[in-house]
Every structure is written in C-alpha cells, then in structure tokens.
Amino acid sequence: MRFLRHWAKASASATAADGRRLEFACWRGSDRSVEDARAEAQRAAEDVAARAAAATEPLGAYAYGDRPLREEIVRSVGGDDARAAVVSRNSFGCLVLNTAGVLFVDVDLPPPSGGLGAWLGRWFGRGGGAGGSPSPEAAALARLEDWLGRNPGYAFRVYRTRGGLRYLETSRLFDPVSDEVAAMLGELGCDPLYLRLCRSQQSFRARLTPKPWRCGLGSPPSRFPHETPEREAAFQGWLRDYEACCARYAVCEPLPGVGEGFVNEDVAAVVRLHDDATRSGSGLPLA
Image (cartoon, rainbow, N blue to C red):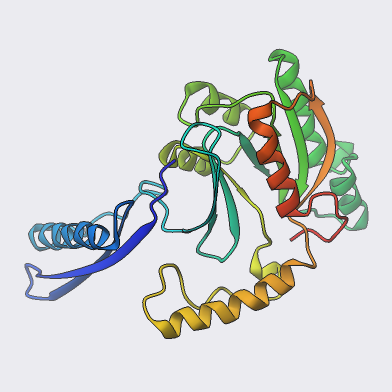
C-alpha cells in the first residue's frame, strides 16, 4: 500500500516568458520524517517552477490517483504483508478502510426516479425500470450472480450503500494491480476511477463513516496535515460534531450473500472491522 506518515509543503517561484511572476506549492510525503518530506516537496516545487518557466503551454494537471494519498493514518491493522490494512481519514473527513489484499468492489447505481414505487423497487430489489425491467439494484445483483456462475469458487458479502452496492470478497486475498482484479472489477460494473486508484495506490478502499453533507454538516475547515494550531483547533471542533452525527447513521446494510459464503482467516479480521465501523446491520439510515 502507498501510505506515507509524514507530509510537508514547500513553494518555489518562476518568471514566465511573458514576464509574469508564478508561484507554485507542492505537498510531498515520506515514511522517514517531516524533514525528508519537506526536502521532497522543495525539489518537486522547484521542478514544477522550472518547467513552468520554460513552457510555452500551460502545465497539465496530475492524473487522478497518480501519487500517494495525503491522508492521516488513524489506525493500522496487521503487518506489512497482504493481510495489512490502514484506516485513514480522507479530505472530506470520512474514515476509509484501505486493504492490501482484501477486495472491495463499489458499484454506483443511478438515483431512484418515478415516485414511491420506483424507490421501493430500488431498495428492495424488485422491478422498477421502464417497461417493467429490473431495478438498477436487481440488475447489478443479477450481473454478480451471472459472473459467479461463470467463475465458481468466489464468495461475496453484499451490502447496500446510500448510492449503490458494495461487494466484499471473503474467500482469499487479491493483488490490487493484477489483471485478474482489473477484469473482475470491470465485469462487475465497478467505477473505472476506483480501479485506477486501486492500481495506483496498490490497495482497495471502502468508506467506513458517513459523508458529512449527508449528516447535515459542511466539509472540514482544514485538511491534514493542519498547517497552524488554529487550523488544527478548527478541525478538531468540526470532528467532534461529525463524530456525534456519525452515531445516528450507518454506511451500509447487509444483503443476502452470494457465492460459497466461505470467510478466509486472513480476511475475517477486516470483515469484522468493516462491519463494526460501518454499523452494518444496525438498521440506522444510510449516509
């Protein structure tokens, strides 16, 4: 997994060909120290400034997920092998489970439309599409069942989320950058951006706590690492409110499992952590 414990920001300036003064700032991380992270950030900022000064066209943006995520590590689970997991806090303030080998698949579904009947069809898996076609959820589950019929030996726990479905494969560990995983996620309808992130970060991800705007909160006032004591204090105040709101919501709820139902011993601890943290099975509203 590509997670770094220490982060720092540095800046550099350059003069463009038209005489404008340009300022650039870069964040970089390190597992060794903040000082090492700061040195990496300074080199990166100076490199960007030099390229900008020599460029005749605007610099391109970084691709999604092309570098380690700047997220606070809240908890580590397991060792350094494929059974390891990290709980981090993302830029929205949510806790996220990152796993080296336990496979999560998130399938986004379109929001229900067509009134109460369509809403019930979506949430209870009944027909609800145009002309009596299956609901998006039922179609996704049928796709999973069809895939398992052609690929026996897998076992999935299935959860309903606020925006779709989440599959947790429990039979064994997987390599996030393997062709097997890429093919599986594509065939199961997973978001291509999630697949790209998995390959780049060499891990799988699953959100553990609600999105703050679904709890009536705004985004956190500061992002890790907090650059001043004032920003840190503002974030801690927001975090207290957020954690109080989280107690009233779940992130997912279980649906009947598919596949063989076997839970590998290397996966069991992650399953327990996920189900406890998401309040799966609590009956609380999803957020």
